[in-house]
Image (tube, rainbow, N blue to C red; front, side, top):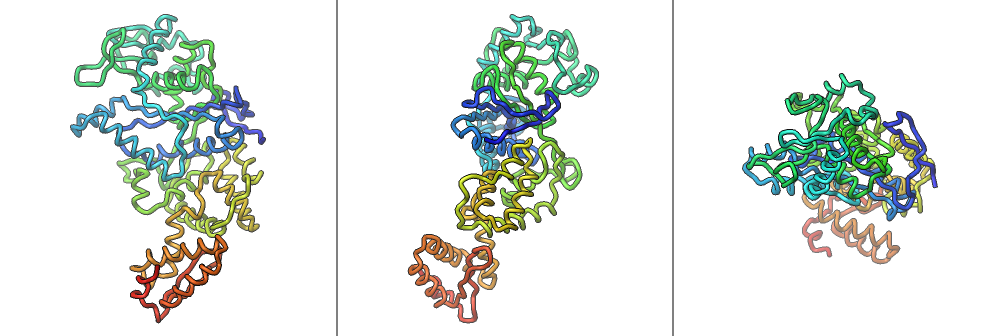
Length: 465
C-alpha cells in the first residue's frame, strides 16, 4: 500500500494520511446550493475530490471508503428563485439536483456514497442548536439562535485570520440582537411565505453553516478523516462548522484533515457574468466540449493552485486524449495503475505529475499501464467514448457524412469481431463493406477506417446487415 500524504489546511503542512479506521475511511465535501446549473468553478472540487475518492478506494478497498457530499436545498437563493419563477421550491431543487448529477457524471465523477439533502436533517440541526444553548455556546434572541463566537477559544485557527479580518470577510449582519458582531446564525425565523419547520424557538429554518455539521455528524460521526471544499469556503463556512461541531460534540475532533482547492479563472480573468466569461458545465457540453476534456484541463493543474480555463488548454487536451484513446483502444488495462502514477497522486493529489507520467507511458508504448492509469484518474475506456470513436470514423469518411452513422456502426461491429478473434466473420463483413465501394483498414492506434472510393454506392450500403 502506498503512503498517501495530504496538505492539511489546519496544520498548514503536508502530512502522512493515517485514517482513524482503515476499514472505514470517511470524507465529507461541501456540495452545491441547488437553484441553478453548476458553473465551472462548482465543478472543480467535484473533480478534485472524485480523484481522491478513487485513490482511497484503490488503496483501502471500495467497501471501506465512505464519501458524503451534500445538497443545500434550503437557502434564500432558492427562495428568491421560486418567487421569481412562480415554481415550487421542491420542483426547483429536484430539477437542479438532477442537472447537477447529470453534468458531474459527464465529467466522469462517481456519485458519492451518500448525497444527503439538508431538509432531511432538520431534526438533527435543531438538536445541535439545543445542545449548544445548553452548553453555553449559543443563545436565543428574537426567534434566532446564534453561536457565541467568544465561547470557542480556537475560533479562527483554520483560516488564521484576525478578528478584524474575519469581521470584514464575513460581511457580518449588524443586528441589535447579537451580543458580538461575529456571532453567526444557527436558526432564524420564517415568515408564512417562506419554508419553515417547528422548533423550540418558533417556526423557522436553519442557517447555512449548521447544515453540514448535522449531516457530517449523522453520517460520519463526531470525528472523521477528511473535509474538503473550495478555498472560498474556508472562512466563514468551514470556520463556523468547526466551532459549532466541536462545541456540540467536544468528545470528537470533527474533521482531522482539511483540504481546499483553489479557485478557477477563465482566460486569465475571474469568471464573471459581467465580463462575459461565465460558463456552466452544461454550456460547454452543449458546445461540443467533451466531459473528458473538461476533466483533463482541471487535472492538469494541481488542486491547490489557481486553475485557468482556456480554449488553448481545451484544444491541447483533445489532442492528448485522442492519442491516449488511440493507443489504448481495445487494449486490456494492467491489473493496477503503475507505481509512478499512483505515487504522484499519493503526494498531495499531484494530478499534474500523474499526467506527466502518463505521457511517458504513451511514449514508451506501455498501453496496458496507460489504460489502467486513465481509469484510476476517472477517464473512461476508449471503447466507451463516443466522441472519440465517431470523430475518428468521420474523419475517414468525410466525403459521405450523411452515411457516417451507418458506416460507423458497421465498422464497430467489424472491430468487435476482430477483438473477439472471430476473424472469419470479420473478414466476411470487411468484404461486404468493400463490395459497396469502401476501402476498409486499421489506422495507427487501432482506429477502424472506411474511406469511400469512386465506386461507393450508398444504396448498397443500406442493404448491408
